[in-house]
Image 1 (cartoon, rainbow, N blue to C red):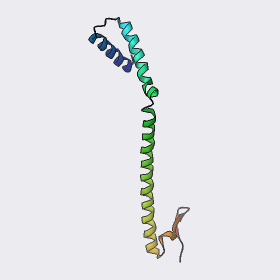
Image 2: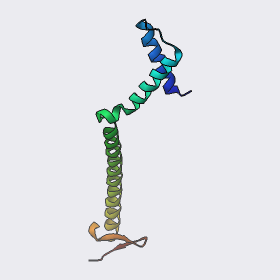
Image 3: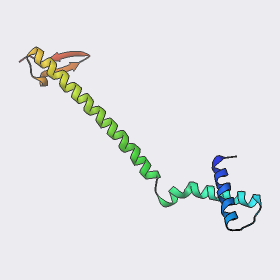
Amino acid sequence: MDHKLNYWIESVQSSFDENNISVSKDVVAAVAKDMLNSSECQSLAFGHDTIKSSNTKVDELTKRYEAKISELEERDRIFRESVAKRRGVSPEDVYIEHGSVMYNKP
């Protein structure tokens, strides 16, 4: 049996017991199935969780992407400055073409 359905069966049975409601196990199971179906539709009915969690994931991925881009840009800047200093050129004149480091001479 599904663990979610088991949860709802226990919950419904507990509620019936606390309120002195006597029903058969079949009735408890039927009500539990209805509660399970209702709980699965709750976020759709009220419009929460589905959109927020999606945006949260997109925001997280965007932050990671931007951090990686910044890291690579900083690495590129340091590399260009290093090559430029050794070659006596401006960092803007250093570039990579087809896997080779190139620079424009003044």
